[in-house]
Image (cartoon, rainbow, N blue to C red; front, side):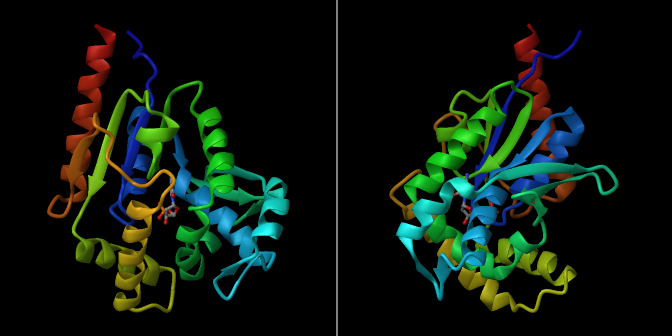
Length: 234
Ligand code: DC
């Protein structure tokens, strides 16, 4: 018997492995993966490239006038088996991970018009189901009716260490302390912003992966998803 199609929401703090989890789930269960953080990053890169953010100052008039010029899409790279982010047709997958973008993205993701645009796009992407999406407000705002919701967390030092290891792999010149400062700021921005702050949805399953190996975490998450599929099939 074929499983019924489901949507999965994965929310949580920055750098706690949400996107790795979402990618493994997408592979294991043959679902479409949507990285909502990549969209906020791509929009931020657009504003940086067009000098709408300059020296951390945002030109709101220009921002509102140019918001409809932004087109975001995803491209599945068969060779690398990953989904890459396109900004107005250009592959920006590496550029959006740069620390300059990381430093500005929280400010941009607090702007109502930016959120409205991206949330309506994200809702369209999951309307036909079979989507696993990660972010901050997926279980609460983008897909409040998701079949299964996870809220991922880990201690901040562990998260900073993982991000540091990831960035130096791409020859990024950054120190551990710079990452820790950035993560602390993003945690505060994410949880304290007025519009759609990061909050755990009441029906989300909390996974603290501080002392879980990648394998243990995946086993746990996969078994919870299989359990849900069995319930849905009965
Ligand atoms: O997941 P990430 O670190 O790539 O996300 C980048 C930023 O985008 C993060 O600082 C918070 C914001 N974001 C958001 O506000 N809502 C989402 N659904 C996803 C990301």
